[in-house]
Amino acid sequence: MKKARMYPFERNRYFYGKLLTVRDFESEQKYFNDKRRLLNRLLFGSGVVAGMQVVAVDDKTITVENGVALDYLGREIVIPAPVTLKLSMIDGFTNNEYKKNVYLYAAYDEKGREPVHSVGSASARGDEVSEYNRFLESYRLYVKEEAPAPDSFEHAGLMEDIATLYRDSDVRITARLPKYANPGEVVDVTLVVEKTLQTPRISLNLHCETDGFELLGQEDGVVRFLEPGDGQETEYRCTFSMKTADRAGTFGKVSFRPDGMELSVGDTRVPVEAGAGLQSEIIARPVAERILKDWYERTLDQAVEGFSDQDVCLAKIGLLQLGPTYMIEQVERVPFGEYIPNASLQQRLLHTQRAAGNNRFYTEAQAYDVPYGRSPELDVIYDDARNAFEFKLGIPKPQTIQDEMATGVIEVPLDGNAKSGLFSRGQRSWVTDEIVHGLGKGQVTVMAGLEEIPDARAAVGSGQAGVYYGSADVFKGTEFEPLLPGVKFGTLIYPGKGTFRIGMKLAGGTEAEKLRIRWWAFKKLPGTAAEAEQADWDSEAEAASSKEG
Picture 1 (spheres, one colour):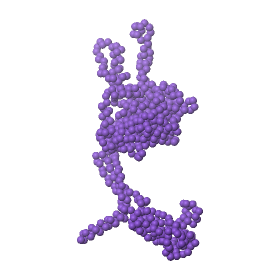
Picture 2 (picture 1 turned 180 degrees about the horizontal axis):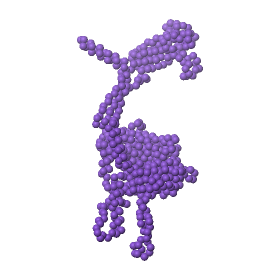
Picture 3 (picture 1 turned 135 degrees about the horizontal axis):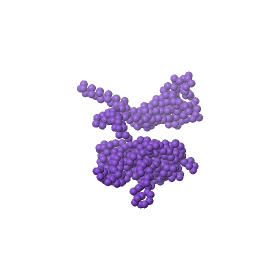
Picture 4 (picture 1 turned 120 degrees about the horizontal axis):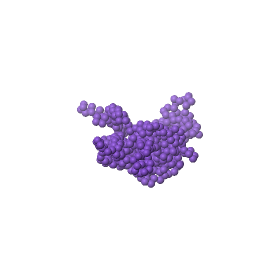
């Protein structure tokens, strides 16, 4: 099975007197090997079956534990005993800058063993000839310094649409979107930012244009990523959500224009020259069924040959530069999830998921506004077919303070002859001109109080100022007694004009030159609870009157 193209399987037929040659014995081995590897490939896939953990022994050395894996041609890779190697001695390690991650792979490798004298070849050629007596089904460890493409893995193309937004020798940014989605479903776009440990802090502003999707939680259509200041990772993932349209049989699309991508590495703005796009097919049937359909309908060449040149990645190893040399910073085992789980374990997990699914409920929520003053409303609908609850919550609108309240300050000179816009009604009584409260026409309530600032040099907000409402005489004889004699206030409201006057009368003489009056105006808003209650009372009274009639 060095090549994936299939031929009819052919096995030896034995009979008495058959002359067996090398060809017969080779075809005997090939028959069983090819069948086993074909079933390995199609039934189990590829990846680590057990063991093969990669451990950093010191700053420059790793150990690969013994284990078993299957490669992408169904061949068994067996490491029979732990192997310890200097990283720089592994095939493929040529990183002179020591700034990149390196990826450790395991590959199937056959080697000849036990060289012996070949009697037949020697008689034909006339000189001594050696042949290997055995083939050792061994392994080979090697290093790649470039990360594999995200879509190079077998199942990636079935489940995700993947686009590369930016790539250079130190940074790679990809976006991933589920390949299929149901109408009205919320799906996540995953941004994957990969970098070397020595690359400066990365920030990304990404403007998204959508068709068939509604971007959620991003009012300006910009997705932002900022690497944490103390980040010591080589890979970051962030997601943003979109809601699919209710149109099965169409495609939801999200595109990223190069002029809408702002990428900074450290203090350097990096230009992005090419745009990218993702799409997801909106389907009515369950997504898992559609993925399985694609899996079952693939051709044999796609199933067997499509990833034949791929080996199993055992670890991603991060390197840190130390002057002219390096040290192993971290080791991430099987970074791309290439595992083969046991069939009985999968069966048990499936039963566990089904049992959990029987007790799992799904919820959907929708909020709407109700008028201010009304009680909150809650409506719950249960969909038995989907095991889902739909909650509809009515939330009262907030009270709009700016629309029902106004305030102001006026200063009233105590000199009756002063031209202050006030006119006198007796020796110690004053009435203001009309004051516009700004709440419009209609009934308002006005409250006035005497504001005192004992120390004119006091800073604003220092707590020196105070406002006396009502009768200030109650504070007489205390440390809070006002400096001015008692002042009585009255208000005159003009509902049809939206104005009012304040009348004031001093209870005694004073050396003060002016009064500082703080006023507040309040107005009931339409639709408040009090008016609703009054309307209900009027309706009941009218109904009672009609009944009596």
